[in-house]
Length: 502
Ligand code: GLC
Image 1: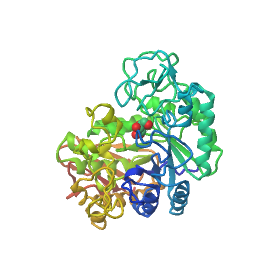
Image 2: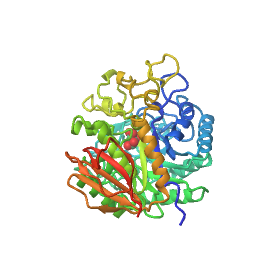
Image 3: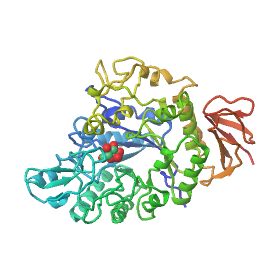
Image 4: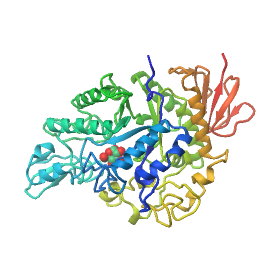
């Protein structure tokens, strides 16, 4: 069987408003992404995933879409998008776009019509509401002028579609075709376990994002992905879809990955695992046992950056552990998703002033929850303020960058062999060399306490999560390590790739 491109792909998530600003308004845009594509090709990733760039009032950074078939002027034009795709393809990069089917913006013409009383059945309007809460805090219902309320599992500016209405199905099939016709290689599906709500909208006890409940993970949702799969398969060139699916178990996740549904799903269990060899091993075993094509991810635009997660759990370890986790992740069978800035070792920015924060999580919780702005601070490309090369000229970026970003900038790290950027480049180049010569399967090796050793053909990966150095497994040569190794010993918080000839 031919191996599809996405099976082992490294996909780089671009949070468009924070990646690179070409227009000089302090907000990242598509032309900025396009200018930096050579940087991404040189980094060694296979694909980019662009977060929503569609017309939007930006109640949730663009995850509130007012028009699914255009580009917001803040981010550029459709022509900019087309140039981006053609440049990316010329550089050998695939392009995934974000599709947001659970809800639209309240500015979407369908919702505006619903407010006027026309075709309300495209959304979820009720006279009597239930106890559901918005994921961003506060009630999930907002009353409109005539006394009915509409459901929004996120911000009030994000009304949920009614997927029991066939018109919604038809609309999204058409939207998929619109972007496929413009050459996209696939889709990242926002809140993919949402869409359907249990009939009768019963009250719930636990409404956590991942639980299968009346709110999430209804069986009918799979029919949607079967329809979408047929559309994707109708285009040449292995077009694919990856779902943002939060579940309690790998078995639930696997339901979305049946052969006629999605190609991939995010595997948040890896991101949530503590720094422990047993936790890592369990996630890896459960994942590989349950799903045909695995994916791995450490950070994204919704969670605290992994460097800071490790640092908070055990101060002084953040950078070392984040580098070791990357090397371990890149040695696993399947595809890996990186989040912009992790290749620079960026931490979460925890001290943003309240006035600067824009995430609806912060705003809707009246500041009780910090929200996700801290992982969305614009990328530092150069040493110098005010924007560290993010915007041209002297423009301030939409979220302030801390002074520490100068030392972490691309300019500072480029060419420095000890830098995290050069480490990522080496790891991705080495992975690319190995990719087609090692088997998809993984075997465990006997590991000393605190460590985890595994092998795939000639590659051995060893990671030490414990407090003491451990002896390296038997090997012929060292390919790459996440930190210094000496005299055959693997220090704490370090991972290594070794080669074994036979
Ligand atoms: C997804 C996105 C997140 C957004 C939410 C609502 O979880 O990743 O950023 O706020 O959906 O669209």
